Length: 297
Image 1: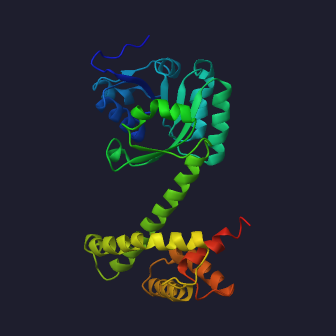
Image 2: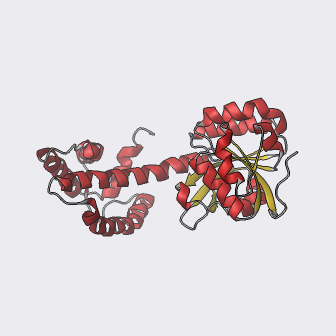
């Protein structure tokens, strides 16, 4: 039996996995006053949290049994399975919130498995880095059991702003991929720009203010793109395909002449070329989505 410190009066919750994100999750729960049970394969990772009144469990089974809400944050779904499957007999009537990054297919399969053992399943995606967990900068996505989400939302909201996306457990992972894809594209573009300006001795910190202003302008342009895509009308856009093709071609040529790898922009250049070849040079930049959809069709 696990006994949490008496001054921890919030709902009991268990965290399985104490890497950087798992430790941040447990820390946010402790800050909120939750009775927090923690477990990690490497037991010494619990020491810093124990000093803050978390309760280390001697085994994963003991940790799961200690709380009605069990949050899992491990490296991948293989690790999740390795921890949960030997302890399937103690999952009944627990809410299992899996915040491990994976694929929609993995989320669906784990939800089905958890359901056969009497657990209520929520899949989650953490749109945060460890230092923003528990702050207004972070938000988490959830999909799966609506009853479980409603019952435990007060606790989940201590971790980050919670967004419930529906009963299909795979949806959170799909949104996660979409959001990460947008972010990675922006960050990779920024790193390429830094490398290009480095050829002229420009420090990244000097470039940053104008890059930030420019990217904020790109964000302000996104509603126009979204509206054009939803309407299926690309005839009135202010940023046509052929103009953007010329700009991306120039970026690639300049990069190559300065000894900077231009491959980061090659996929976009190929998409623009395909849209022009399809006879749509004057369409809005948003129309590139039609090329991206072709494989689905």
